[in-house]
Length: 185
Image (cartoon, rainbow, N blue to C red; front, side, top):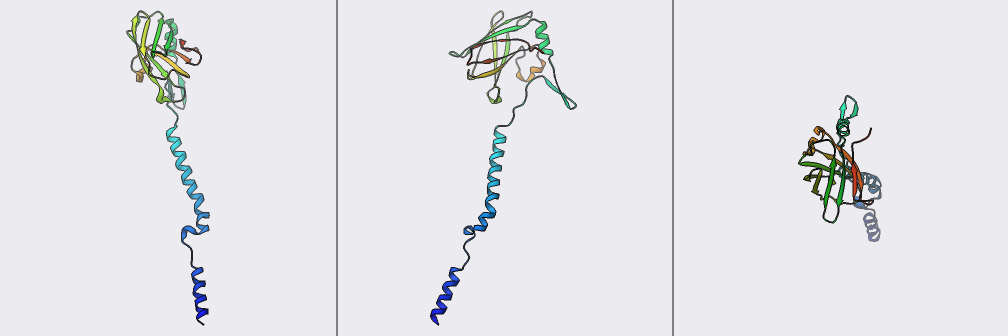
């Protein structure tokens, strides 16, 4: 009789429920939920880190339509403006030769815009060294492709108020110089 009781006690111990974290049904139900939480956290962090940059150009919104204003380019064309930009990667100097029917300002603003990362954009103040010739220092890495914009306005936030602008694009893998001119429509 003792043997029978002992065997029954051992059977009850063997049948005791396992802790919750050792149950296969718990993991079958919770694993997809935990996976969804992890993937959602990763997607949110990627969306915040690599969000789209703001467009900085002369676009304005009118009701539901966006319009492009080319007044600055038309004025530059009327003034017969053109420029040649030359970058010197060794000493990080940018030189600009400007020609046109204007009174040459003491300083100009050259904006280097990275095609993908707005954090890499740089605004360079070019100072006049002689009539029509300007120089400035550049900090941006002189490699790959960049968009260039030349303005007589020194405050980059007020680029829409500038009298004229010249634009261009440079690929440093192809060369260190590029002409700037008004945008053709």
